Length: 200
Image (cartoon, rainbow, N blue to C red; front, side):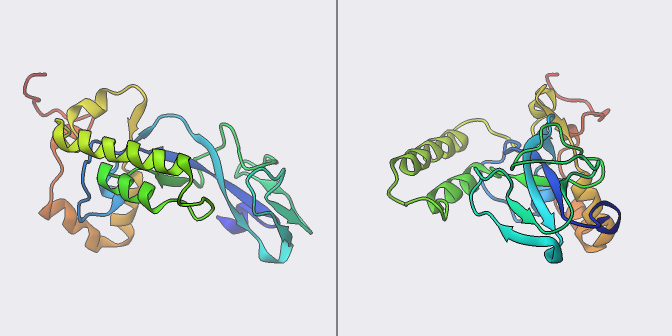
């Protein structure tokens, strides 16, 4: 893929954004299996893959016009379109894409918010407010009727089913297929399921 799409310079890769999928606590399973519903729109954020020999300097701030200054080549996506800055609106996802599991379960999200970011002061009021919101979110998840991968997720117009990362992992590391035997997912998570859903 890199030989074909990044001869020189930088290849930028857009995100697909996966939400909590109704999980309230962490489960001992790969994230690629636990989270298979994602936002239907491509996220504009990008990660970069750079040819080291072509780098002149690296900017450390997102507000930089370009995050990598190059000696040779361009900053482009897998369609060959030149990209400036840290965003690529409606970037391609058919050749290479980053699956971003931002939130995971409510408990994992609280742990993430409590940990904070490396570029923020841990006493920053905005960080403390985010931690309080995450605590409330976890409390709501634990006391509510949150069911991981419940049928209602498939009815959310903003989400689409995408287990491509899980299928890829099982294909290339067959031992992972054991999870489908020892911890089967509810049949009703699949939008094309023909199983009968109580009360539906």
